Length: 438
Image (cartoon, rainbow, N blue to C red; front, top):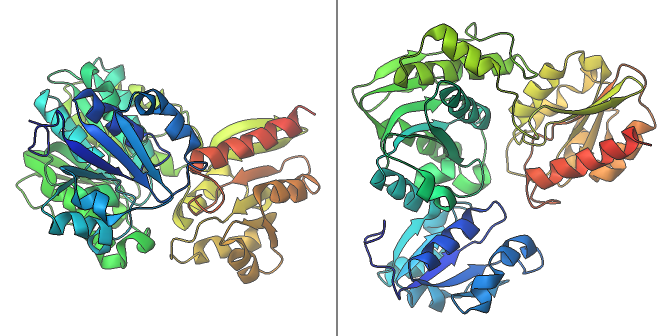
């Protein structure tokens, strides 16, 4: 039996939303490996999904996988045995294709739920991390620290890819650190974690949830997934959130933090403090040993990543900053704001961009790109509506002087001009390295 309660061998499975982060590819491979006949359906074009489609080419060639790209058809969702929906599909309770599946009695699940069920079957133990900002870094810090303390650990979930791709490597007693988005938490029906961490909360993904209340309730679902006797770690702005089970409660205040980290940013001191509490809850190592392990973590790609320097001009990639609050933290982390040229803007998630606009007076320059670029530049006098990353870069490099920092910290998602934040970050890094090496 599979995680959705049906045998997969010979069954017809629809994967809704192949996506570009690896989760869709991972679950398709996993389903085919268990004998399912898979139809991948995505409203995006084959051209835009080229990389993901290429990964599945051998399975397509051998007839195990078929594609319907550029559209969905209700009939596909009604005439199958199982639907695996991509959590990125907004407001799934309103989606007519998922409703068609439900009306036809077809079970609907997600890649993350299947992965969670397989992790549980293998006897691994879970730590869950969510939050509007800081969850990727905190989850990665926890896994890194546990690894440094000889505790076998792996991080996955919203970090990208699929844990199903490395399922065979997961062993009994191992720690799996799950970064969980609000969309994932909305879908998850079965999960028990020994530690639940909520890093922060601010308005985000309102295009997906429809309103702030639904977004908050989705985040709070993690608290109900903490095992009785487990630990809840709460960041400063969620200290009032109440767990739903008998748990050890650990509240982190603004003064808490771990210094001397290998990463930029004072806000990472707070992330490290939350990671420390999570690790302490499941590991017998001394506080000093945990701190030493955390201090060796060098950070994530595209998260305050120092790309290089030329003639005293530094380039920092913070493409993973997809909320205005994260962009503010990025600027604060870099240092002297009066020497920062900030590139911001992107896909419109329906949240206020005022935190970015308010920084204009303290910056060397603010350059708006993407769908929200005009709004940012229009609201901040003296800003530049560059439109594209390339144009912003060209304007900035004609202005910079020794001691300046060029910072990509968009405060918005990337989907208007790029497939994902990684692609956006790589584009910035290529521009920076090209300028540095001239």
